[in-house]
Length: 346
Ligand code: AMP
Image (cartoon, rainbow, N blue to C red; front, side, top):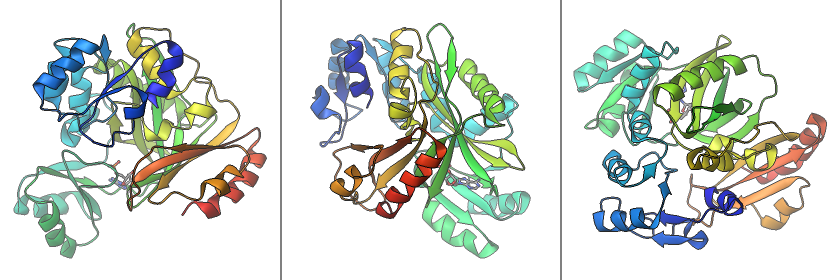
C-alpha cells in the first residue's frame, strides 16, 4: 500500500522481505533474503536513496546497519521503542502519559507476586514479538497462572492490569523531517480474539486533543519521522496508553478512501521531506478487516461505496488477507450500507 501510494509521487521501490510470497513483490524489485543477510542488505542500501519499514519486528541491528548507509525513517530508536513493551510503558510513564499498572515478570514466583500486586484480572504479555493478540494470556483467577506460565514462561514477560475499557481508540499522526505534525481524526477500533476487526474515524471526538497531545509527546521524544499510531484504551472517559506502532497502521487503512491524504502517502511525504498532506475526512467511512477466507468478491462488489483491498496472501485462520472500506456521504447512508456488508464479514 506504500508503493501504491508512492508511484504517483514519482517514487520507485525496492523491497526486502524474507517471505517468498511477499505481497509487495509484484510492485517493484523484491530482494528475497533473511534480515541477517548482510550482503543482501548492502545491495538493498546501494539500490535505494531512502529506506523505511512497515513491520515493527525488523531486528534493531538491521535498522542500525541500514541507517549507517542511507537515510532510514522512522529512526532506529523509534523501532527499538516499539519492540519492547516494558521499555514502551516506562517511556509513557516518563512522558506522564497514563498507562495501566504493569510489572516485569522474570520468574514463576514473580508472576505470583505481580498478580497479587496488580490484582486480577490481568494480562500477561511477552515483552517482545507480540502482535494481533499473540504472546498474551488473560488471567482471570489464580488458577490461570500455571497454564499461562506454561505457554509464555521462558520469554521475558510483563503483567499489566486488565482495563475494563469502554472503547479502544488509536491516534494516527505524521511527522515530517522538519518536525511539522498532522493528525488524523481519532479512530475507534473493535478487536476480537486480539485481532482488529473494524476501524471507524470519529469526527469531533472529545478525546481528540488529549490523544494528539500524548502522540506529540512520544513523536517529539523519539525525533520521529513518518506515520506513527498510538493505541489507547478509554476507561472512565480517559485515555490509557496501550502501545505505539512505529509505522503505518491497520487502523489507518480507511484513510485511502476516507481522508484527503492517505496514511501511506503522508508517510512517504514525511520521509521524503515533502510537505505533509491534509488529514481532513472525505465523508463517512468504516474499515473491515478480511480475516481468514475472504468473502465472495462478487457479493462485496455489489455493496455500494465498498472499496475492496486483497493483499494476495494465502488465507489461513486468523490471518489478515485484506480489508474493505465502506464510504458514504452521510452517517445514515453509511449505516444502511453497513447492513449490507456485515452479513458477509464474519
Ligand atoms: P495488544 O497487542 O497489546 O494491542 O493487545 C491486543 C488487544 O487485546 C487490545 O487491542 C485489547 O483489545 C486487548 N488487550 C490487550 N491488553 C489489554 C489490557 N491490559 N486490558 C484490556 N484489554 C487488553
